[in-house]
Structure formats: C-alpha cells, structure tokens
Amino acid sequence: MQIRAAVLEGFGQPLVVQDVELRGPQAGEVLVRLVACGVCHTDMYTASGVDPSGYAPTVLGHEGAGVVEAVGKGVTSLAVGDHVVTLFSPQCRECVHCRSDKTNICLAIREQQGKGYLPDGTTRLKRLGSERGGSAGGEPIRHFMGTSTFAEATVMPEIALAKVNPEAPLDRACLFACGLSTGLGAAMNTAKVEPGSFCVVFGAGMVGLGAVAGARLQGAERIVCVDLSPERLELAKGQGATDTMIGGQHAVDQILEMTDGFGADYTFEATGNVKVMRQAVEAARMGWGLCTVTGVAGKGETLDIIPRYLITGRRVAGSSFGGVKGRDQVPQLVDRYLAGDIDVDAFISHRITLDEVNKGFELMHAADGIRSVIEF
Ligand SMILES: NC(=O)c1ccc[n+]([C@@H]2O[C@H](COP(=O)([O-])OP(=O)(O)OC[C@H]3O[C@@H](n4cnc5c(N)ncnc54)[C@H](O)[C@@H]3O)[C@@H](O)[C@H]2O)c1
Ligand SMILES: [Zn+2]
Ligand SMILES: [Zn+2]
Image (cartoon, rainbow, N blue to C red; front, side, top):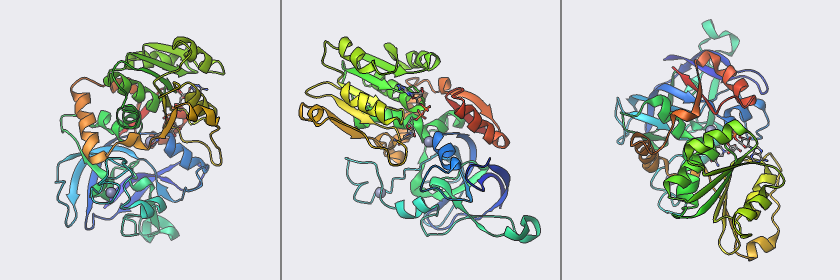
C-alpha cells in the first residue's frame, strides 16, 4: 500500500513528507493505522545526526497510537480493530529478561531493531516504484526504533504493540509510548517510591513531569521539582509537585537545607545533563537515598560521582522506559489515566499535521510547550 510518511533523507536536513510504499505484515507482524503521534527529542536527536547509531533514509517517529488494520500469520494477541500504543521497547514475554521481574529490557529483537530492520532483517518500507519515485524507486527505507510512526500506517512486530482500552483517546494514549511512561515508571517501577517519602525531580519536561506524577501516585509526601523554566515548574505543580525550585549550582544545598542536611529519599534526573545527574546523586539522602537517572547524555560524556557518596549509602539506578514492561504495563497506565489519576491533557501543547512535522521540531528546539502531537 501507499502511505504518506516523514522521511529523514539526510542528517541535519528537514524531514521530507512524501508517499512511500508499505508492504503488508509478515508472520508475527501487525499493520497499524496511526491516529496520533507525539514528537519527541529522540526523533530530533537522530535527525540532527548527533546520534552515532542513526541511519538514513528512515521514517522517524516512535510515540504512536493507532488501530490494528491487519495481522500477519501467527499473531494471536491482537486483532483487527484493537487500539494500540507503539513500543520502542518491546516485550516478548519469553526471553531471559522478559521472564525476570528485574528488568524491562527485552532481548528478542534488539539487534535488528537497532539497525532499522524488522526482526527478519528486512524492511516493509521502500520508495515508490521507478515510474513515480525516480531512479531511487524501490530503495528500502529503514524503520526507526522499530516503530516509524511519523506515517499514516506502520508495520510492527506483535511484541512491540500494547493493546490499550479503546475508550482512551489515542491522541492522549500516544504519550504513553515514550516520555510519560518513562517518567511515571521511573518513580513507580525503578525507584518504587514509598508513601510519605521526600522526592526531588530534576527536569520538568515530559519525563520529569511524569516522574512527578509517578511520585504523587506512589504517595510521596514532598515532591520538589527543579527546572530552569518557571512555566514548566508551574506545570509541575499541576502534576503534584509540592515545591518548585529554579535549578543551578545551589540546588543541592537548597535540598539539603529542606531535609535537615540529609538529602532526599528519592531523586530523579530527567535533563540529560551530566552535571545535573551529579547533583541528583549528591541530593540523595545518606543511608538510603536512591538516585534514578533517566536522561540520555551526549556521546562520550561521563557522570562524576565521589565514591564516598555511594559508600555512605546512596544508590544510583538507570531507567530505560521507566522499567515499564510495555505490553503488560502501558495498558495499566492508560487505565489510570482513564480513572482520572494522570492529567495527560496538560502535556499536549500543540496539535499539528504530519506535513507540519518539522514545525514540531522547531517548537521543541525553542522549548515551546511540552509535546506537539501529530494527528492523522
Ligand atoms: N530513559 C529513557 O528511556 C528515556 C526516554 C525518553 C527520554 N529520555 C531522556 O530523558 C531526558 C528528558 O527528556 P524530556 O523529553 O523530558 O526533555 P526536555 O528537554 O523536555 O526536559 C528537560 C528539562 O530539563 C531542564 N533543565 C535543563 N538544565 C537544568 C538544570 N541545570 N537544572 C534543572 N533542570 C534543568 C530543562 O529546562 C527542561 O525543562 C532527555 O535526556 C531524554 O533524552 C530518556
Ligand atoms: Zn521519545
Ligand atoms: Zn523479551
């Protein structure tokens, strides 16, 4: 079939929205008609060429939600008409990691996904045939993050789709595909915040605000959100922050002051800045403070930690997709949204069309709003 999709033709160039060919689902695969898709930093990061593992041409996008239109042979967990959220972090339920409750990092399709291919090592996307597509007609186009959701439709492995409650509007559900679940999960799964605790969240973007909401759902007593932007700190209050603070070099001292010199039970880093990661470690409480790092640092950057901070009982954990096992837990998070526990509307700052995808990048670059959502 022919679909419209936003193709990364070359690094550092605007995406080119064009018609491409999408082949139907093979064994274990599912064709999804996309309804909405968030525009995330990771898409922009790859488009810029800074990501060392990036490739082109590829159809970007990974925060998708849509409706199943067809299923390939052997697909048993999904049927035509199901509402789904796309998962860049799949859950096969069979690999050694999926069978453990200690991690959500599924091993089943990592290698091919990392290279932009579906699990069988090929793509379903290609340029239109030569009469229409010029000399490059028929050239394969790779699948970004196994998702490629800046497109009217996508073909994905069954294990990378979460079936969600059809009552959830898909323009909200799509945010559970990445940043929101990452933040919620960092607090709920990775840190397992205890009721009555003191939490600090560095960064009030999608991920940090999700962590604020997660800490609130876990029953934290104090949630301090630290950011450089007063507008974003205002949003943090809406998600449950009890205190807000402008970040900078005094942030750690200020947190120590608020905690009788001890530090916070739980800290979260959601900025991607290694200096802030260090602050998050140093703001964690002696004895048992747990620092959860979610930010993605620049290539080659390292996190400096004075070992004494660890010996005296602080711990550091990293969190990919908030430790969320996507097929099991994304539907549960969406249900909590439907139950009124999570205010998703507050995150959607702009609604755009697929043709305006580059505008989504510009808005993000200008830190204008939290999320632009593409509606198909
Ligand atoms: N671990 C994962 O699975 C995962 C998933 C999605 C995103 N991420 C990463 O999480 C990070 C956050 O993502 P996002 O979408 O929320 O980004 P974002 O850019 O929207 O938010 C980052 C926030 O950090 C704030 N900030 C910058 N410097 C600061 C400082 N010194 N002190 C306090 N706050 C400061 C910024 O003002 C901004 O509001 C990024 O690094 C992103 O790549 C990780
Ligand atoms: Zn993302
Ligand atoms: Zn697995």
